[in-house]
Amino acid sequence: MTKDKNNWLEKMALAHPLVIAGPCSAETEEQVMKIAHQLAKTDATIFRAGVWKPRTRPGNFEGVGEIALPWLQRVKKETGLLTAVEVANATHVKLALEYDIDILWIGARTTVNPFAVQEIADALENTKKIVLVKNPINPDLELWIGAVERLQTANIKNIGAIHRGFSTYQKTAYRNNPNWQIAIDFKNRLPAIPLINDPSHICGNREGIFDVSQMALDLQFDGLMIETHTNPDKAWSDAKQQITPTRLAEITKNLKLRKSKFEKEFALEKLENLREKINLIDNELIKMLSKRMGVSKKIGTVKKEQNVAVLQPNRWNEILKESIKKGDKEGLSNLFMEKIYKAIHQESIKIQEDILKR
Ligand code: PEP
Ligand code: MN
Image (spheres, rainbow, N blue to C red):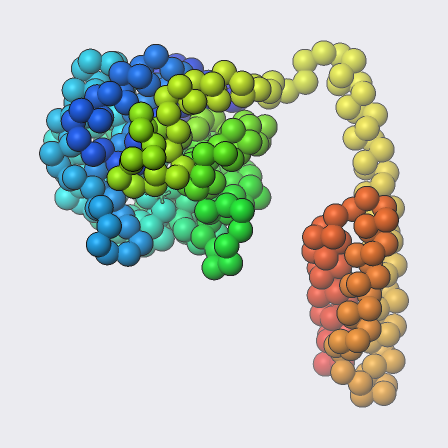
């Protein structure tokens, strides 16, 4: 990523993109060591393993707990990989520090809870350890940033963020919907905080990992956290989404790294021409939108004179349907047209409501 960040990631001089890999959960010492030794031969530089597992419903495997921490120490000693665990309360933090784990991450179910995050921040005060904050399970940028701020207030300097997607009630192709715009907004608000992507928890399956990882790199994420297991089908948690170290190596080999900026003169010139075109089109677009809202205002006056309701469902349905159809013919996606027209209609309603209120 950009060279002017001067953050922990650059100071550590780890490969770009940073690859964090390892099982969803530490299961046995043998499993941990086997995965770690295979990962040491890949691009992974940090070994992750859940020791305390936050499960949605009780009765599932909830992690082996403290006994796994010496296994992670062995991983570091034998492979040189740095180690990472999830912490969800002050006790976890205390133990992780006692066993000198290098990186602590706050899981999505913990980031939602300011009390828990504050407890972790207090337990970690002044630490030099790296602390990664996963996005909260709900799409709330402020809650995510708030968690980072609690750590910053506790004088924790080495902070990173992980985009692991967001829960939805209606099931989509993803286990946790990637809301790339929230990640982009996060980056804009906190540009110095390295941003890592977790395609495993986004996808919930093995098939999507490559594409989501590539998307993340195309959006200039700084690293990837990918769940890896030598026998994924037999994993004690998140079996469907884990991949083997061999597959991980294949994925990282095939990922395309993009330059963060244009280098060649001609490319720059070409780009500037195209951007100039975009600017002209945007000028027109804005003028047209303003014109449309002007007409909408006039309609508002007529509605006020006739004492007619602002929302006319039939007319609105017709506009929406026709716009989607016309957009479709012009190669614009139905979803895009729907979003645009809903935004335009909302603004129209607001303008007319202001007139009716007068
Ligand atoms: C995990 O990383 O294993 C995990 C529980 O992730 P999340 O907090 O993103 O659900
Ligand atoms: Mn998991």
